[in-house]
Length: 217
Image: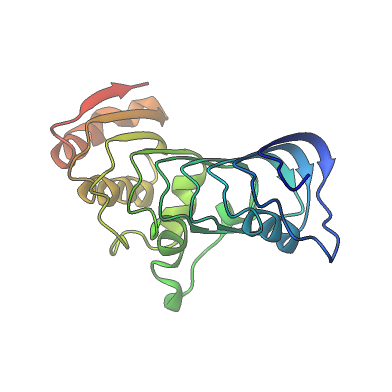
C-alpha cells in the first residue's frame, strides 16, 4: 500500500490510526460523501507529499479545513465548513464551493479580522490559472473584508468562473478586487442571482475586466 498512487473513496469515514505514516507515492485523492475531523483530514492530506490532484466533495464533521499540499495542482472543494486555510503554492486550478447553510456563510467578521478569509484561502495561490468560486464562497470572502486589499496579485490567472449575488454590494466589490488583481485575465464566466440586478452592475464590472471574454448566465 506504500506504493499506492490513486485513491478514490465514497460513503466512508476517515478515521486515521495514530501510527498513520501517509501514502508517500499517492498523487490522486478523491473523497466523496464522507465524514472526518479537522485533524484527520489535515493529516491525511499532509502525509501525502506527492499529491497533485485533490477532490473533497460532500463532507461532514469538518469545521476548519486546512489544506497544506505543496505539490497539488488541481483542487475541488465542495462542502460545508466554517473556515478554510489553503496552502498550495503550485495550484493551477481550483474550484471552491461553500454550501448555503454553512456557518461560514453566516459569519460576521470582527474588527481585527480584516483580510483574514481572503489571506487564508487565496494568499498562497500565486500560480493559479483557473479559479472557480461557487455556492456561497464569494459571500465567505466578502465577509472577511476582502474589500480592503487582496493578499496577492494573480499574474497567471486567466480564467474565472464566478457565482455571485449582485444585490449584495460586498460580494460585488469583492469581485472587483479579484478582477483588479488578475491583470492577465482572458475569460470570465458569471452566474448571477437575481438576474434583474445585472443591468445595474454590468458597467462597473466591465470597467474592471474590460479585455477578457465574457459569459453571463
